[in-house]
Image (cartoon, rainbow, N blue to C red; front, side):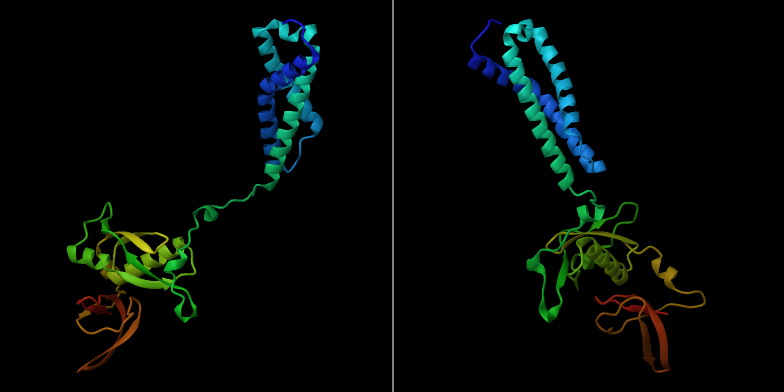
Length: 264
């Protein structure tokens, strides 16, 4: 490379500095970020300078293999400018990495990543407390490993809707819907996925000997076809009045859509 004027040498130095300074800048940024994020320690500026010059030296050596005149005595000004550019890029990148490592939150829990909330326009604030009405959306799917749902049970599940407190995350609300479906339809298993608009996608398994497991030893379950109060659920204590007298028992199953309730 032939000798050139001072302005051209400066431009050549800036070009060489940018060409060889990208990798040192990336390394300086990465180390600055990692050290600050994991240890809270800032790498000293002298360490950044040594590291940047070492990486830039490797780049410059590779560049010299392509053109040996780059490192000639006639280009000392360009080399000096290139070194300054490399150091400026590395120090700037290190400062940015250090600042990013200090500002990034160090504790991100799985709950923070998965916590979802309901859309504000589906929450009913009547009565002073937020309520949301959950409705089943789409077809009710069968669960793998269980018999398919009977047609009437699938229809009842598809028509299910209920009101729940709206001041809980969607994950917790899904659990509440699962509990309600289990209690109301005696399902062997059920999974619920809610959208932000309280639309539920449901997959369920029909009852498989579940009722007998709820009857305590020494007790018998009796099925009755009668009117039941709204909100009657499994576990409620009831009194049945017949011609023979009053009989106390515990509800183990209840169906309100034309079915009967079982009590022990």
